[in-house]
Image (cartoon, rainbow, N blue to C red; front, side):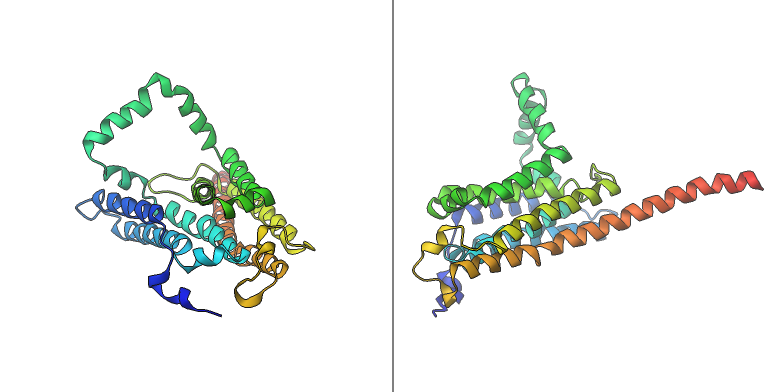
Amino acid sequence: MTVSWLNPLTWPIEPWVLLGVEVTAILYLWGAPWKPTSSWTSSRWRAVAFWCGLGVIVLALDSPLESLARQLFWAHMTQHLLLILVAAPLLVAGAPWMQIWRGLPLSIRRPVAKTIVRHPALAAPRRVLALVASPLAAWVLSSVNLWVWHWPPAYDLTLRNHLVHHLEHGLFLGLGILFWAQVIDQHPFRARLSPFKRVAYVFTATIQAWVLAAVLAFATAPFYAYALLPWRPGGISALTDQQFGAGIMWVPGSITYSIVFITCLYLWFNEEDARARSFAQPTIEMLR
């Protein structure tokens, strides 16, 4: 079995990925405040999350994983999980949006912001965006997107058409960011859902992902065009490849959900405890 893909000089280069990452990074640096803020420690951790998020995008789309994904289902699944469950929550935790916006020249920001906020022709798109950004819409869109791209005709199309493949990855990342923005606070804003609703939100998303993983894992025949390949790296069969990918989705894919779920559960218990104490204190005072 060849190991030439271990040589960085032979890695596949996706110019659109590198261009997007580089432009985002430059705007982020240009938009950084000149002086450290009072919350410098927390802003440093947000910066770490942002840079790690960009790094994961490059790892998923501009590394040997991209070459393997053309031949192995489990590698393609790993790409998806890196985008949805690692890069997206890291970018949300990094809360880079305002800093990236400040990186644009003021001569661009002012007219663009004025047009987006006030132009009558954009009233309908603004309402649509507000609806799409709601927690329910974000949950539905991200879940439907996951299932649609694992529908065999759609999945096989991504293997044949490079543009569709790019669209698939863009939607996984974009809707992943939209999903995690509902449960992860983005400084200085809080997530829209209460701690209890965040628990339910993440739990139900985990369940639907598990169902898809189970469908893939317990299938008696491979679903996708990988089965038509005369040879796969490692000599793995198409069905075993699919089951291995399902296992990656089921077990490592549950790590992010579990971390966020436990954190939201902790916040919910803390909120309930604080509410109970605030209710008990006046009662104690009345009994004195």
